[in-house]
Image 1 (cartoon, helix red, strand yellow):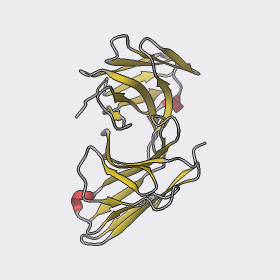
Image 2 (cartoon, chains in turn blue, orange):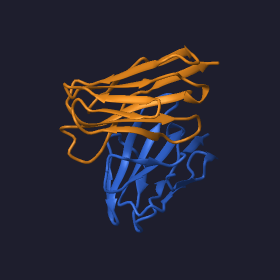
Image 3 (cartoon, chains in turn cyan, red):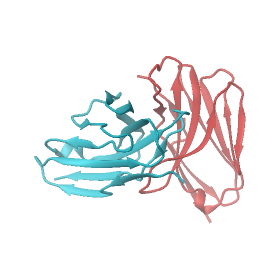
Image 4 (cartoon, one colour):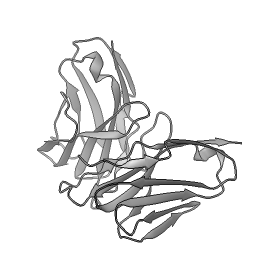
Amino acid sequence: EADIYQTPRYLVIGTGKKITLECSQTMGHDKMYWYQQDPGMELHLIHYSYGVNSTEKGDLSSESTVSRIRTEHFPLTLESARPSHTSQYLCASSGLSWETQYFGPGTRLLVL
Amino acid sequence: GQQLNQSPQSMFIQEGEDVSMNCTSSSIFNTWLWYKQDPGEGPVLLIALYKAGELTSNGRLTAQFGITRKDSFLNISASIPSDVGIYFCAGQPESGGYQKVTFGIGTKLQVIP
């Protein structure tokens, strides 16, 4: 059983608000990822990290930012939420076998 | 970027039937992965494939890494209602270079009891 957690699971928020989506893993994995997934669609990588103080942008452009101050924690922040940010955000991590990613349950975000 | 074509996009089958789905790309992949996603949850890794021609099983699931390295197949035998979900193929393209995976659009499987 993978130990990766995301909070909140669901978030409804108004336009212009600042939000932070939390992601934590207790497996000691170096690599962590954020994906964006619209209903019925594939996952798109928006951010990834190889370790503490390392962050990179993914294939899909995103207005969100991330930080990696601790190995186990990889929060994603939107400074000013917009309706176009409505989506599901999935966090994942991987260890030595980098391609074997363990996913959290996701955060469903609705921006009104 | 790299694109994975997954088919079929959805399928309805009778409980007990076998299921086949596949994933193709115009590019060569080094690794193929198959995930299952239940509603409201994150994807869970089912099978990982690392070599061309590799055939790997996980219970009733069997997946193969195509010889051309441009495709992969997943078979589910004797389907049961809990097989319902979305199955995603994913892989690392040879030209990827960043230890990232590319995901297909998914195959939505419905099992009729």
